Length: 274
Ligand code: GRG
Image (tube, rainbow, N blue to C red; front, side, top):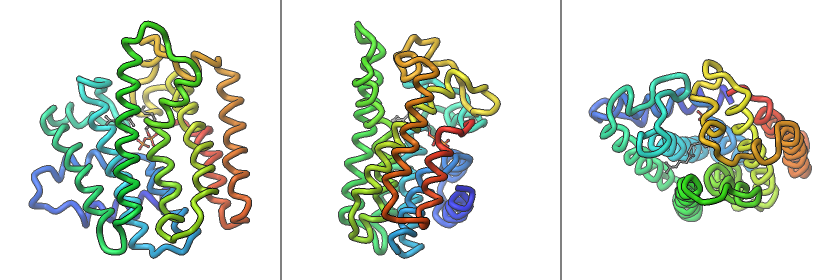
């Protein structure tokens, strides 16, 4: 993942041009994350023999969509957060108008990259659909805040599949999709991985500390929101996450040892501290 991060960092330097007045806040929004989605694109692409430069732009495109979602999610009209990746959020370091424009611009940049040389077509179409699925998830989440009754487990799973799962799935299937290969195994890997990722996120909200996680913790709990932890309890949530990691790893059998890094990534998702 560190390797994916350094390759993306270098590409950010090439793509963000000094004449762009948003270069600083866009760089701030793009940098400092785990680059987990970029890593999935790069590994899935490597497994399927996709050209490295093409894969890198697909990886950067998904990080642009992810970063835009975080910048907008942090705004006062949404989750109202001051801290992201251990740094002030874009609207805190600059202002709200800048944060809105950074998100807008990152989304357009994602489509500039995903329609570039060797790209476009099905992969770009799917990115548009999955980015919209994420927005639907955000809207479901907002609606749940004012609903008369807390969400059920099935509803939380559905929300997760939209809000977090869609981008993770796009990242996982991008490689086989670009190679014209079967997306089945990577798609099933992403389903289990995405759910494990969200359960781990809910566990970090309860068990993590702000300095390590790099963003506010305890928010869902304090807001009385239904989460995997509130519905299942800590122990059962951890057990489910562990089972999902095993499930994700098993989906990769046909790739043999070539997929070991993706297996390790699945284990990392639930052991991560941020
Ligand atoms: C505002 C359109 C719009 C969408 C927002 C993704 C999202 C939808 C909001 C983020 C809130 C949140 C806590 C989502 C759950 C899991 C998640 C996406 C965590 C952040 O992803 P990481 O851990 O972050 O990959 P880094 O910082 O490593 O990139």
